[in-house]
Image (cartoon, rainbow, N blue to C red; front, side, top):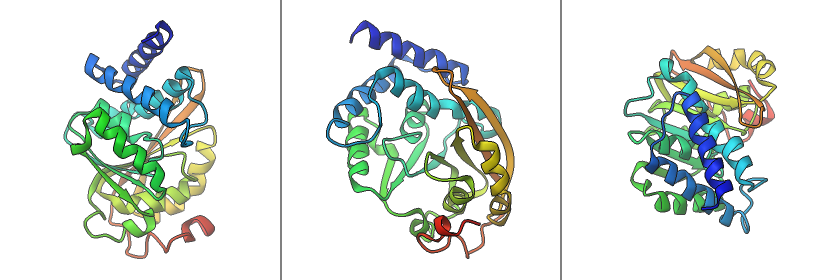
Length: 246
């Protein structure tokens, strides 16, 4: 491992600690494997826009671990089933799975080539037993009784606006569970526009946590609690949440 990469990995460890997550040497090694494999895979399958180590560590790994800022509310140090809708290159689901060895992940995406990457990655990281990989649209999967109202937590990052992703995610969350959305500068505006949707879907806004990535980029974590069951009307048929948001 080159000195530059070692320094970059150390930044990950330091930043994770700021987010209330302590990474041991074994976990750091898994992140290194992840970094190397994503860099290699991205040469033929576009998963991230930049494979510069500093960029991937900050914009993807560190950002994913920002959920640790909600540790008190979420009680993260427990066995927890969570779902990542639109997992793409693995964010935030895989970094969270590395950070929390007791967790189990349902990784969902509608793009098969991305899920192929996730499958191979999980094998390399020796975490396959804790991951269920599903190729599906969220609107369709949420109709599956085995997945609806099942998860302690749903996470989503860089998929759509809050009023749309609330309809994708909240049906999966059990009562008293949580939905966490990773957002950039438009978080306040999106949250305002999503109040009706969140309420209709059985959620209640808990907090918006502002944080900064290593590159001084401001980000936000929006936390929603599921306080009542989502009506069977939601989610609506595939494509409608995007075309006609609540």
